[in-house]
Length: 177
Image (tube, rainbow, N blue to C red):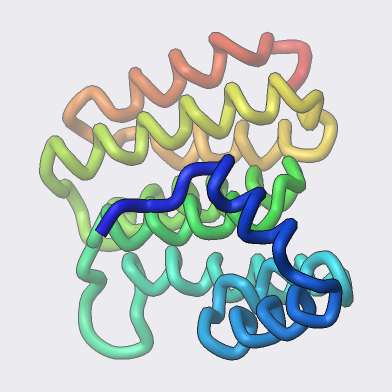
């Protein structure tokens, strides 16, 4: 089945009355939780509550209520991507990214050495969050937490400590600690 183009969608929407469009949006909200969350952010400003839901998804991959973490990177990436579709708030996005990195560092400190893929995923997200924070001038909000992450990496193998320290100092200088 072919996806409608933007031009086709514009024609379709133009053919609908305001009442029909409202009904269609309400139907989408009933059918799709992401649409409901999208409008919850816009109508009720429930951004923090919705962000907490996505933080919980990420955290659960490392520390579920029962058993061991599954570390499904695709689930964590999807949670972050889904939230970015709902909200463009750079603080909330940074919070989710930091949750991913903090949880990863806590996980390896709790359970010991993991595999190379694990460390690469955490390093990549740390780099992304550092860049995101720099791009959005959020250093004053997150500088101390990012430094604490770097510090909690001390003594972790596979070159993880070295890379995390290097990434941190690519964005922050000693006087900002």
